[in-house]
Amino acid sequence: MADFFSASVAGAQSAEQTLAVRANNLANAVTPAFRAGSVRQATLPSGGGSRVASVRTNFANGPVEITDGGFDLAVAGEGFFRVSTPRGDRFTRAGNFTLDANRNLVTPNGERLQPPIQLPFEATRFNVTPNGAVSAIQPDGAVQVVGQLELTRFPNPGGLVAEGRNLFAPGPNSGEGVAGTPGAGVFGQVVFGALEGSNTDFIGDVVGQITDRAAFTANLRVIRAKNQMLGSLFDATA
Image (cartoon, rainbow, N blue to C red):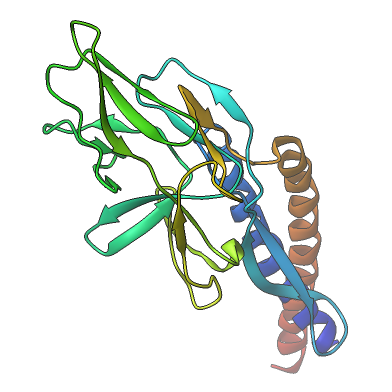
């Protein structure tokens, strides 16, 4: 009975954590380049029931979607944008960049793209080629090259550490990041005027939530029944 009760507690905890991960996935179903999480289960030592072993990030690419944003960039293939933060350089697939007060390309939270790209104040618009060359268009139509985008690849992206806000830090299992030019070798190309969509499996997570809720409820009933049985036993021996 004790093992059965322990299995029910672990099962309820596992279902609760899985529900939380799925809820986060669904909440970010329209977040640019969001990487969905998934829960990996492990069998309990007793052989009955399971527990959460780890929460993994799915690094499969999301769909590339054309946008109206003037500074939107997507990576079609492998590679991350590198941005500077107070904690050091971080990596992201989200290319919904904007301009700061000094006309530098930054994330919506103000992290500056690296290497820095600064647009002239007089430029009316800009363009980015698939290999990452950034040009500013002057009022007279003259084209001025203002920078070159880089991408960074990791031997094992699954080893990156999610820090929130679509930012990832290198981890002990990610390997060393290697920078390169978009479109060169195995690096993906840059798509200007587009964003990578979330890779959330919307239908799968909605259906999964129904199953997880049922599992949580079933395990909770077992726990309650056990508590009621113990309460009756104590009452009888009092």
